[in-house]
Length: 151
Image 1 (tube, one colour):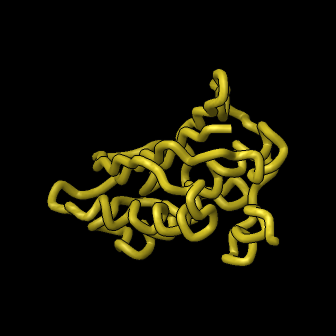
Image 2: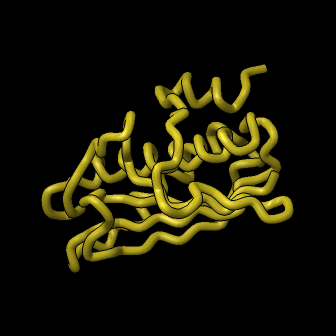
């Protein structure tokens, strides 16, 4: 049986091993929950997309950005506990989408993340979720994702 990390890799996603370089923690564990800080769509430390969804970033690009940001959240979990296979459940996913005032498809951006979570993790990937619009996000990322997982 493939590990969760192998399943992600089979879909083209590789978990980063980069260390947190922020003033705050990449993730905080309290009891059996890990709260992962917001992640952008960075690949090897570089933003894959920059801009505003509905203006310079398409829905499809935003969906890809959201999946990359989600995988970066999962990398934090793996780096904290050693293996994604130790996860009991993805409890919550929050997605922030830098979008124009008339863009209302934030849920469609995050639907791709939800689908990936369930496809890779099955029952463990079933989660609650919120999708929010924002006028801008750090460094110009079009999407930021944070998660809470039970371990």
